[in-house]
Length: 181
Image (cartoon, rainbow, N blue to C red; front, top):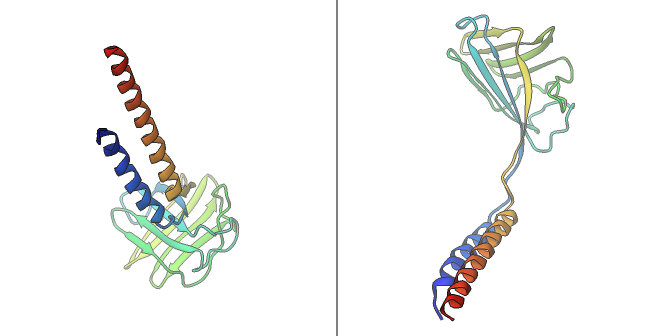
């Protein structure tokens, strides 16, 4: 008997064993936002922010340090990262709307806030003596849940590919034996 069929199965079994021993990934809620800058930076500059909340966050409830991951704001003049909050703030609804009409994240001299306005959200970002503001077309869009498949999912997928490979090998070997007969 040839060892060739085993060469494809052994790596699949080793990978399956490694993946089954891995810990499950933690899924956070990620809200991505983008808008236009009006004050404090080049007019019309596109800016973005990303809010990460813990997977156990209940939509519409207050955001506290217990369910807050981080808020990251990016522009040409200000890169702002807030990882803890001085005070809790209003929450976010499942559709991305602000639960209380306004939301503010503050940590020491760094702050970022949204306020509902006609036509979108007004926003303000401050840190290191820089204050930026934007108006109008800003929207808060839930990006969904960022997840990684569980180890058992990876194992089943590898087992399936291994099975398909074995069937293909078996059929090619069977057809070559039939041709010799």
